[in-house]
Image (cartoon, rainbow, N blue to C red; front, side):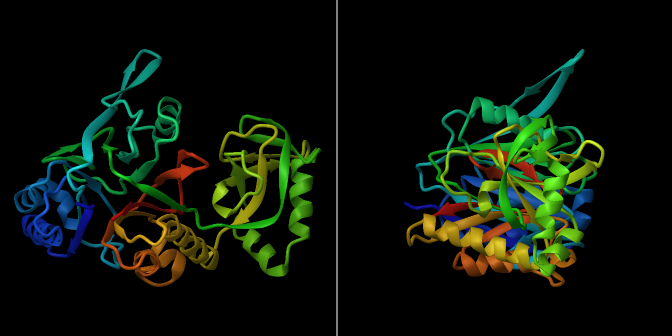
Length: 386
Protein backbone atom coordinates (compact mmCIF):
# COMPACT_ATOMS: atom_id res chain seq x y z
CA UNK A 1 0.00 0.00 0.00
CA UNK A 2 1.34 3.45 -0.92
CA UNK A 3 1.75 6.48 1.30
CA UNK A 4 -1.45 8.35 2.17
CA UNK A 5 -1.64 11.87 3.60
CA UNK A 6 -4.60 13.76 5.04
CA UNK A 7 -4.59 17.39 6.19
CA UNK A 8 -7.06 19.81 7.70
CA UNK A 9 -7.10 23.22 9.34
CA UNK A 10 -9.66 24.50 11.82
CA UNK A 11 -10.49 28.04 12.87
CA UNK A 12 -12.75 26.95 15.74
CA UNK A 13 -11.66 28.82 18.87
CA UNK A 14 -12.33 26.06 21.44
CA UNK A 15 -9.17 23.95 21.45
CA UNK A 16 -10.77 20.52 21.97
CA UNK A 17 -13.39 21.22 19.31
CA UNK A 18 -10.76 22.44 16.86
CA UNK A 19 -8.67 19.32 17.41
CA UNK A 20 -11.72 17.12 16.92
CA UNK A 21 -12.78 18.91 13.73
CA UNK A 22 -9.35 18.94 12.10
CA UNK A 23 -8.52 15.46 13.39
CA UNK A 24 -11.68 13.91 11.95
CA UNK A 25 -11.12 15.52 8.55
CA UNK A 26 -7.48 14.40 8.38
CA UNK A 27 -8.40 10.86 9.47
CA UNK A 28 -11.17 10.60 6.88
CA UNK A 29 -8.67 11.51 4.15
CA UNK A 30 -6.59 8.46 5.15
CA UNK A 31 -9.59 6.31 4.16
CA UNK A 32 -9.20 3.82 7.00
CA UNK A 33 -5.41 3.51 6.84
CA UNK A 34 -3.63 3.78 10.21
CA UNK A 35 -1.98 7.10 11.07
CA UNK A 36 1.72 6.36 11.48
CA UNK A 37 2.64 10.02 11.94
CA UNK A 38 0.67 13.14 12.81
CA UNK A 39 1.98 16.70 13.04
CA UNK A 40 -0.02 19.41 14.81
CA UNK A 41 0.60 23.16 14.59
CA UNK A 42 -1.38 25.49 16.86
CA UNK A 43 -1.75 29.26 16.98
CA UNK A 44 -3.77 31.97 18.73
CA UNK A 45 -6.14 30.94 21.52
CA UNK A 46 -4.98 27.31 21.35
CA UNK A 47 -1.67 28.34 22.90
CA UNK A 48 -3.42 28.79 26.24
CA UNK A 49 -4.16 25.07 26.50
CA UNK A 50 -2.70 23.08 23.59
CA UNK A 51 -3.15 19.81 25.49
CA UNK A 52 -6.90 19.98 24.82
CA UNK A 53 -6.34 20.12 21.07
CA UNK A 54 -3.75 17.32 21.25
CA UNK A 55 -6.15 15.16 23.26
CA UNK A 56 -8.86 15.60 20.62
CA UNK A 57 -6.46 14.82 17.77
CA UNK A 58 -5.34 11.66 19.57
CA UNK A 59 -8.96 10.59 20.06
CA UNK A 60 -9.99 11.15 16.45
CA UNK A 61 -6.87 10.13 14.51
CA UNK A 62 -5.32 7.60 16.94
CA UNK A 63 -1.77 8.28 15.72
CA UNK A 64 1.17 6.01 16.36
CA UNK A 65 3.35 9.12 16.75
CA UNK A 66 2.46 12.80 17.15
CA UNK A 67 4.75 15.82 17.20
CA UNK A 68 4.13 19.52 16.67
CA UNK A 69 4.72 23.02 17.91
CA UNK A 70 3.27 26.43 18.68
CA UNK A 71 3.09 28.83 15.75
CA UNK A 72 2.39 32.43 14.96
CA UNK A 73 0.28 31.23 12.03
CA UNK A 74 -0.68 27.97 10.34
CA UNK A 75 -1.36 26.92 6.77
CA UNK A 76 -2.96 24.04 4.94
CA UNK A 77 -5.21 23.05 2.04
CA UNK A 78 -4.19 26.08 0.01
CA UNK A 79 -4.93 28.56 2.84
CA UNK A 80 -2.68 30.60 5.09
CA UNK A 81 -3.76 31.86 8.50
CA UNK A 82 -0.93 34.23 9.33
CA UNK A 83 -2.48 35.42 12.58
CA UNK A 84 -5.39 34.66 14.88
CA UNK A 85 -6.51 31.24 16.07
CA UNK A 86 -5.85 28.21 13.91
CA UNK A 87 -5.00 24.53 14.12
CA UNK A 88 -3.35 22.52 11.33
CA UNK A 89 -3.28 18.72 11.40
CA UNK A 90 -1.14 16.69 8.99
CA UNK A 91 -1.54 12.89 9.11
CA UNK A 92 0.32 10.20 7.15
CA UNK A 93 0.06 6.47 6.72
CA UNK A 94 3.23 4.87 5.38
CA UNK A 95 1.63 1.71 4.04
CA UNK A 96 3.16 -0.70 6.51
CA UNK A 97 6.71 -0.29 5.17
CA UNK A 98 7.80 2.90 6.90
CA UNK A 99 8.40 3.87 10.49
CA UNK A 100 8.54 7.18 12.36
CA UNK A 101 10.48 7.16 15.63
CA UNK A 102 9.78 10.20 17.84
CA UNK A 103 12.32 11.99 20.01
CA UNK A 104 12.66 14.91 22.38
CA UNK A 105 16.18 16.34 22.37
CA UNK A 106 17.62 18.79 24.91
CA UNK A 107 20.91 20.53 25.56
CA UNK A 108 22.61 19.42 28.74
CA UNK A 109 25.38 21.64 30.08
CA UNK A 110 28.12 20.46 32.42
CA UNK A 111 30.62 23.19 33.15
CA UNK A 112 31.92 24.55 29.86
CA UNK A 113 30.72 21.53 27.90
CA UNK A 114 27.30 21.06 26.33
CA UNK A 115 25.91 17.86 24.88
CA UNK A 116 22.75 16.96 22.99
CA UNK A 117 20.63 14.46 24.90
CA UNK A 118 17.76 12.49 23.41
CA UNK A 119 18.74 12.77 19.75
CA UNK A 120 18.64 9.23 18.31
CA UNK A 121 21.31 7.85 15.96
CA UNK A 122 20.29 9.05 12.52
CA UNK A 123 22.70 7.05 10.38
CA UNK A 124 20.66 5.10 7.87
CA UNK A 125 17.52 7.17 8.37
CA UNK A 126 15.67 8.10 5.21
CA UNK A 127 14.96 11.53 6.66
CA UNK A 128 14.38 13.55 9.81
CA UNK A 129 11.73 16.10 10.75
CA UNK A 130 12.92 18.57 13.41
CA UNK A 131 10.96 21.25 15.29
CA UNK A 132 12.95 23.38 17.70
CA UNK A 133 12.55 25.97 20.46
CA UNK A 134 14.25 29.26 19.51
CA UNK A 135 15.68 30.01 22.95
CA UNK A 136 16.96 26.74 24.40
CA UNK A 137 18.16 24.82 21.33
CA UNK A 138 21.12 25.86 19.11
CA UNK A 139 19.52 24.64 15.89
CA UNK A 140 22.30 25.55 13.47
CA UNK A 141 25.02 23.97 15.65
CA UNK A 142 23.03 20.76 16.06
CA UNK A 143 22.45 20.59 12.30
CA UNK A 144 26.22 20.71 11.90
CA UNK A 145 26.54 17.83 14.36
CA UNK A 146 23.94 15.80 12.46
CA UNK A 147 25.80 16.47 9.21
CA UNK A 148 28.94 14.99 10.73
CA UNK A 149 27.26 11.95 12.30
CA UNK A 150 24.73 11.18 9.55
CA UNK A 151 26.01 12.75 6.31
CA UNK A 152 23.47 12.87 3.52
CA UNK A 153 20.41 12.40 5.74
CA UNK A 154 17.99 15.24 4.93
CA UNK A 155 16.65 17.22 7.89
CA UNK A 156 13.48 19.27 7.30
CA UNK A 157 11.61 21.37 9.80
CA UNK A 158 11.52 24.76 11.46
CA UNK A 159 11.77 26.84 14.62
CA UNK A 160 8.58 27.33 16.64
CA UNK A 161 7.30 30.88 16.15
CA UNK A 162 5.14 31.19 19.28
CA UNK A 163 5.10 29.94 22.87
CA UNK A 164 2.19 28.22 24.53
CA UNK A 165 1.37 28.47 28.23
CA UNK A 166 3.01 25.08 28.82
CA UNK A 167 5.74 25.12 26.17
CA UNK A 168 6.16 25.50 22.42
CA UNK A 169 6.86 21.84 21.60
CA UNK A 170 4.41 18.93 21.41
CA UNK A 171 5.12 15.21 21.46
CA UNK A 172 2.24 12.77 21.77
CA UNK A 173 0.00 14.28 24.48
CA UNK A 174 2.71 16.29 26.25
CA UNK A 175 4.14 19.77 25.82
CA UNK A 176 7.75 20.81 26.48
CA UNK A 177 9.31 24.19 27.17
CA UNK A 178 12.83 23.41 25.95
CA UNK A 179 14.79 21.56 23.30
CA UNK A 180 13.50 20.06 20.09
CA UNK A 181 11.03 17.40 19.05
CA UNK A 182 10.99 15.41 15.88
CA UNK A 183 10.91 12.05 14.19
CA UNK A 184 13.46 9.86 12.50
CA UNK A 185 12.00 8.23 9.39
CA UNK A 186 12.95 4.78 8.17
CA UNK A 187 11.72 3.26 4.93
CA UNK A 188 9.90 6.48 4.02
CA UNK A 189 10.93 8.44 0.94
CA UNK A 190 11.07 12.15 1.77
CA UNK A 191 12.15 14.59 -0.94
CA UNK A 192 13.50 17.91 0.38
CA UNK A 193 12.60 21.14 -1.38
CA UNK A 194 14.23 24.42 -0.33
CA UNK A 195 13.33 27.79 -1.83
CA UNK A 196 15.53 30.56 -0.44
CA UNK A 197 13.58 33.18 -2.37
CA UNK A 198 16.61 34.94 -3.83
CA UNK A 199 17.81 35.50 -7.38
CA UNK A 200 21.49 35.26 -8.42
CA UNK A 201 23.09 38.41 -9.80
CA UNK A 202 26.29 38.97 -11.78
CA UNK A 203 28.95 36.37 -12.37
CA UNK A 204 30.41 33.65 -10.18
CA UNK A 205 33.54 34.42 -8.19
CA UNK A 206 36.05 32.32 -6.27
CA UNK A 207 37.13 33.17 -2.75
CA UNK A 208 40.92 33.50 -2.73
CA UNK A 209 41.43 34.58 0.90
CA UNK A 210 39.09 34.12 3.86
CA UNK A 211 39.00 33.56 7.61
CA UNK A 212 35.97 32.53 9.62
CA UNK A 213 33.05 34.47 8.15
CA UNK A 214 35.28 37.18 6.63
CA UNK A 215 36.03 37.21 2.92
CA UNK A 216 39.27 39.09 2.32
CA UNK A 217 39.69 38.48 -1.40
CA UNK A 218 37.52 37.50 -4.35
CA UNK A 219 39.26 36.46 -7.57
CA UNK A 220 42.57 37.76 -6.21
CA UNK A 221 41.27 41.27 -5.45
CA UNK A 222 39.96 42.89 -2.26
CA UNK A 223 36.47 41.52 -1.75
CA UNK A 224 34.72 44.88 -1.34
CA UNK A 225 36.29 46.27 -4.49
CA UNK A 226 35.22 43.20 -6.45
CA UNK A 227 31.65 43.34 -5.13
CA UNK A 228 31.38 47.04 -6.03
CA UNK A 229 32.59 46.27 -9.54
CA UNK A 230 30.03 43.48 -9.97
CA UNK A 231 27.22 45.77 -8.77
CA UNK A 232 28.29 48.46 -11.25
CA UNK A 233 27.88 45.93 -14.08
CA UNK A 234 24.27 45.07 -13.13
CA UNK A 235 21.16 46.35 -14.87
CA UNK A 236 19.23 49.24 -13.26
CA UNK A 237 16.54 46.80 -12.01
CA UNK A 238 19.15 44.50 -10.47
CA UNK A 239 20.90 47.41 -8.77
CA UNK A 240 17.52 48.35 -7.32
CA UNK A 241 17.24 44.88 -5.80
CA UNK A 242 20.69 45.18 -4.26
CA UNK A 243 19.66 48.48 -2.67
CA UNK A 244 17.03 46.53 -0.74
CA UNK A 245 19.67 44.26 0.82
CA UNK A 246 22.72 42.51 -0.58
CA UNK A 247 23.00 38.75 -0.15
CA UNK A 248 25.72 36.32 -1.08
CA UNK A 249 25.27 32.76 -2.29
CA UNK A 250 27.94 30.23 -1.29
CA UNK A 251 28.39 26.91 -3.09
CA UNK A 252 28.45 24.11 -0.51
CA UNK A 253 28.93 21.12 -2.82
CA UNK A 254 31.71 22.05 -5.24
CA UNK A 255 31.66 18.72 -7.09
CA UNK A 256 29.52 19.94 -9.99
CA UNK A 257 30.62 21.32 -13.37
CA UNK A 258 27.95 24.05 -13.31
CA UNK A 259 26.03 25.68 -10.50
CA UNK A 260 22.32 26.40 -10.54
CA UNK A 261 20.21 28.63 -8.34
CA UNK A 262 19.51 25.96 -5.72
CA UNK A 263 23.21 25.12 -5.31
CA UNK A 264 23.94 28.31 -3.35
CA UNK A 265 23.49 28.74 0.39
CA UNK A 266 22.16 32.30 0.59
CA UNK A 267 23.33 34.45 3.49
CA UNK A 268 23.37 38.15 4.26
CA UNK A 269 26.32 40.49 3.82
CA UNK A 270 26.77 41.73 7.38
CA UNK A 271 29.23 44.55 6.80
CA UNK A 272 32.41 45.72 5.08
CA UNK A 273 35.71 47.32 6.05
CA UNK A 274 36.67 50.00 3.49
CA UNK A 275 40.25 50.09 4.78
CA UNK A 276 41.02 46.39 4.35
CA UNK A 277 38.48 45.72 1.60
CA UNK A 278 37.09 42.71 3.51
CA UNK A 279 33.41 41.83 3.83
CA UNK A 280 31.63 39.87 6.57
CA UNK A 281 28.94 37.34 5.65
CA UNK A 282 26.46 35.26 7.64
CA UNK A 283 28.27 31.92 7.28
CA UNK A 284 31.72 30.40 7.62
CA UNK A 285 33.65 30.53 4.35
CA UNK A 286 36.96 29.25 3.03
CA UNK A 287 39.31 29.82 0.15
CA UNK A 288 38.33 27.99 -3.03
CA UNK A 289 34.58 28.29 -2.55
CA UNK A 290 32.52 29.73 -5.38
CA UNK A 291 30.15 32.57 -4.53
CA UNK A 292 27.66 34.75 -6.35
CA UNK A 293 25.75 37.86 -5.33
CA UNK A 294 22.01 37.44 -4.69
CA UNK A 295 19.04 39.69 -3.91
CA UNK A 296 15.49 39.03 -2.76
CA UNK A 297 12.13 40.53 -3.66
CA UNK A 298 8.58 39.24 -4.16
CA UNK A 299 9.13 38.40 -7.83
CA UNK A 300 12.37 36.49 -7.26
CA UNK A 301 10.84 34.68 -4.26
CA UNK A 302 7.82 33.64 -6.32
CA UNK A 303 9.92 32.46 -9.26
CA UNK A 304 12.37 30.57 -7.03
CA UNK A 305 9.60 28.69 -5.21
CA UNK A 306 7.92 27.65 -8.44
CA UNK A 307 11.26 26.57 -9.93
CA UNK A 308 12.06 24.47 -6.86
CA UNK A 309 8.62 22.83 -6.91
CA UNK A 310 8.90 21.98 -10.60
CA UNK A 311 12.23 20.30 -9.92
CA UNK A 312 10.46 18.09 -7.37
CA UNK A 313 7.85 17.11 -9.94
CA UNK A 314 10.65 16.19 -12.35
CA UNK A 315 12.39 14.16 -9.62
CA UNK A 316 9.25 12.04 -9.23
CA UNK A 317 9.38 11.14 -12.95
CA UNK A 318 5.70 11.65 -13.52
CA UNK A 319 4.63 10.34 -10.13
CA UNK A 320 2.18 12.19 -7.91
CA UNK A 321 3.08 13.38 -4.42
CA UNK A 322 1.01 11.85 -1.64
CA UNK A 323 1.43 15.02 0.38
CA UNK A 324 3.83 17.66 1.66
CA UNK A 325 4.85 19.50 4.79
CA UNK A 326 5.43 23.23 4.29
CA UNK A 327 7.48 25.46 6.58
CA UNK A 328 7.26 29.09 5.51
CA UNK A 329 9.13 32.01 7.08
CA UNK A 330 6.96 34.41 9.04
CA UNK A 331 8.59 37.18 6.97
CA UNK A 332 6.91 35.85 3.83
CA UNK A 333 3.11 35.83 3.46
CA UNK A 334 1.40 39.19 2.96
CA UNK A 335 4.50 41.09 4.11
CA UNK A 336 6.53 39.80 1.15
CA UNK A 337 3.92 39.11 -1.53
CA UNK A 338 1.24 41.69 -0.72
CA UNK A 339 -1.49 39.04 -0.73
CA UNK A 340 -2.54 36.04 1.35
CA UNK A 341 -2.02 32.33 0.61
CA UNK A 342 0.95 32.72 -1.77
CA UNK A 343 3.12 29.79 -0.69
CA UNK A 344 0.21 27.46 0.05
CA UNK A 345 -1.39 28.15 -3.33
CA UNK A 346 1.93 27.77 -5.18
CA UNK A 347 2.52 24.37 -3.59
CA UNK A 348 -0.99 23.23 -4.45
CA UNK A 349 -0.73 24.42 -8.05
CA UNK A 350 2.80 23.31 -8.92
CA UNK A 351 2.64 19.91 -7.20
CA UNK A 352 -0.80 19.09 -8.57
CA UNK A 353 -2.91 19.57 -5.46
CA UNK A 354 -1.50 17.12 -2.89
CA UNK A 355 -2.57 17.49 0.77
CA UNK A 356 -0.15 19.99 2.34
CA UNK A 357 0.00 21.73 5.71
CA UNK A 358 2.52 23.44 7.97
CA UNK A 359 3.16 26.72 9.75
CA UNK A 360 4.82 30.13 9.60
CA UNK A 361 8.19 29.67 11.28
CA UNK A 362 10.89 31.72 12.97
CA UNK A 363 13.52 29.92 10.91
CA UNK A 364 13.33 27.08 8.40
CA UNK A 365 15.43 23.91 8.15
CA UNK A 366 16.39 22.25 4.90
CA UNK A 367 19.35 20.95 2.89
CA UNK A 368 21.53 22.82 0.41
CA UNK A 369 24.39 21.01 -1.28
CA UNK A 370 23.72 17.79 0.63
CA UNK A 371 23.77 19.33 4.13
CA UNK A 372 20.89 20.78 6.12
CA UNK A 373 21.04 24.39 7.33
CA UNK A 374 18.91 26.89 9.19
CA UNK A 375 17.47 29.52 6.83
CA UNK A 376 15.47 32.73 6.89
CA UNK A 377 12.84 34.11 4.46
CA UNK A 378 12.67 30.60 3.06
CA UNK A 379 9.96 28.11 2.16
CA UNK A 380 11.09 24.54 2.83
CA UNK A 381 9.08 21.43 2.07
CA UNK A 382 9.19 17.75 2.80
CA UNK A 383 7.52 16.10 -0.19
CA UNK A 384 6.29 12.51 0.16
CA UNK A 385 5.85 10.57 -3.11
CA UNK A 386 2.73 8.41 -3.37
